[in-house]
Length: 297
Image (cartoon, rainbow, N blue to C red; front, side):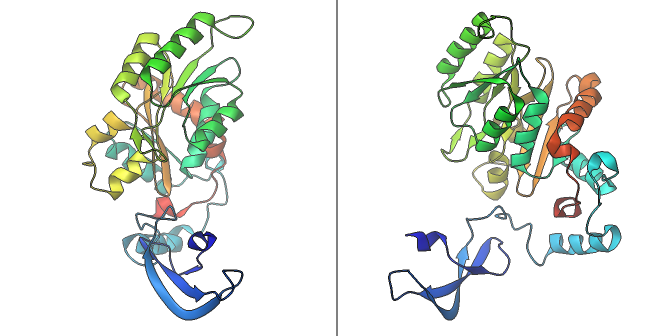
C-alpha cells in the first residue's frame, strides 16, 4: 500500500510527472529499478497549474529576471527587500480580483498563520468552523485569542454560538470581547464543500463581527478546472471576502506559489493604515526576505 505513495520521481513536477519504474520480489521490502519510466498525472504537489515548469513563459521570465535582479534580495521586505516586481505583482493581484490593493506573502500557509495573529490577540475571540484548514488553526493558536468552534457549514449552529458569546462575553469577567473574528473557508479542500457565504454575510452584519474568509483552495481550483467561470463576481461571491473591522471589507486569496491579502475598495480611508498594521505585525510579511520565483513569473 505504501508503495503507491512513495514512488521515486524524476524531472520537473508539472501537470504530469515521470515515475521511475521498479519491481519487488520480497513484498516491497526492497525494490529493483527496471530502467524504464512512466508518465503519470501529478496530483501530489502544489504545481498543478504548471507554473514551475522547466520551459515555457514562466521559466523564460524567471531566467530574464535572474540576469537583472540576481537570485535574492538579501533582505526582508521591511528592510530594503522590496523590489518593483513585488509592487507589480501586488497590483496585478488586486486588479485581477477587482480590489484596491494587496499584500503578497510567500505561501498560503504563511498567510493564514501569520496574518491572523496580526488581527487578533488576547482578549479577542475567534469563531472557527470545525473543519478549517490547519494553517488557520495554527494562526489562531499563535494569536493567543480565545477560540470557539461551530459545526461544519451549519449556519444555525453558528448563529447560536454568536448569540452565546456576545451575550456572555469573556470567561469569568464577562467583559465584552475586544474583537470577534469569524473564520470560514471559501472551499473546504478535504470535504469539497462551499461556504454559504450569503448567509455568513447576513450573520456578520446582524451581529457586527469581523469576517475572515481564506480562499486557499477555491481560487486555485477555479483556475485549474472548468467547474466555475473565473470572474471577479465568482471570486467575490464564493471566496474572497474578509472583514477586519466591522466596517472594513478585505479579501484573502491563494493560488499555487502565490498568496495575497487583498483589501476591497470600500472604506478606502482606512486602507493605508490597515495594510501598514498588517504588514508590520505579520511575521510572514515582515520576514519574507528572498525574491521567490513568483514575482519573477
